[in-house]
Image 1 (cartoon, rainbow, N blue to C red):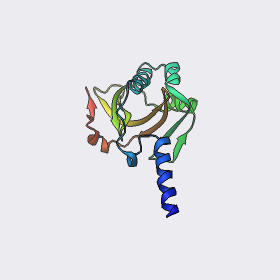
Image 2: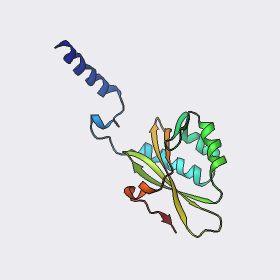
Image 3: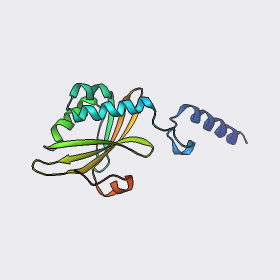
Length: 154
């Protein structure tokens, strides 16, 4: 009996202290104004190639994961450097969306000489304390139809 009581108390304490985004503890609240503003700043910084604004939108220790390959980082500077180094040449468009009850960004790329932007990635963001604290970057295009994203932008 004492084990069951201890588990019930532990669950109540965990529910109070852990993030509300946990599916086991009910539906998460929708995106608030503060999160929308951070998402807007993140997208604008990318769109305008503004490294300073991007740095301001990211936590110093932002965790970035690429599930398709065993690669991650825990550094704002590493993310910015990788973004600048590995983004393909051409134009990019960023579209705010959502995935897994979190804010997300659909990334479209138009290669030089191409007429349309093609969907190339989906970044799922965690925003805490007015900054992006985690980015999970998916670059496999097949599941994007489930998110209602167009494969191309004109």
